Length: 280
Image 1 (spheres, rainbow, N blue to C red):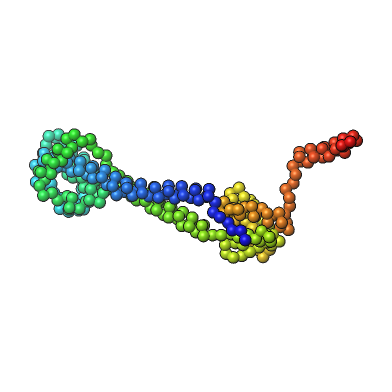
Image 2: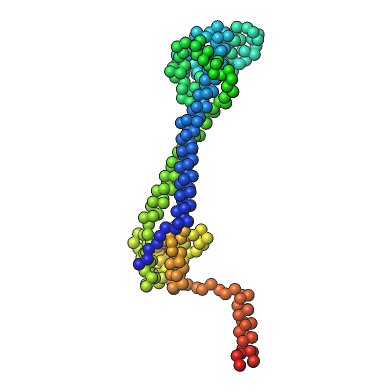
């Protein structure tokens, strides 16, 4: 009894897909836990600097801490459009304008913290706002202004993690399952035994559907009306066994000889039968 082996080409193809999926997952994980949080924190620090600077200019620096950032953010979100309109209507150098600008910058700071999950008192209550402002002023004196994260940046990276882990895991399990699957073939009786234990010989084949042969699939219908879809790509030499059994099956019809070849054969036969054309 001969047994199938797994196609090396298929294993190589699956290995590439598995590596690609897990690579995507690792890439997403690094971005979600290191790269994007760092970018988001940089922008939050910058917004904190701009907010504290505006608070200092408006005489509100000592009250710059936000004990309840969730409630403050919700309130500012409701008023942000009105604040922007009020700022435009106020004189450029007025104290009222500066205070409202500080409020709008506070909204930007709290929003940037929320994107990275840091909108909590731990990050918004400042023990010494003046000292914090000086540290941030030194930091951002020469550093370029960072770009903000969108609300979708981090969730998108976690989506890549999920796709990579689930896709790679599913393919890995598929490859493990396939490696345990075996077809066996008795070359003396031309009997094929399926992984489930069912065996059949060419005489048992009622129909062999090769419409998906180009996709390496064949559907065999047996005399007992059962159908079996065989994967010819993964298992070798299953294709050779199926072709051999097809030729021995009751309904096998040899492929017709092309007309041009048949005409050429007829002409050759006629020429051979002409007088004097044979060996003397």
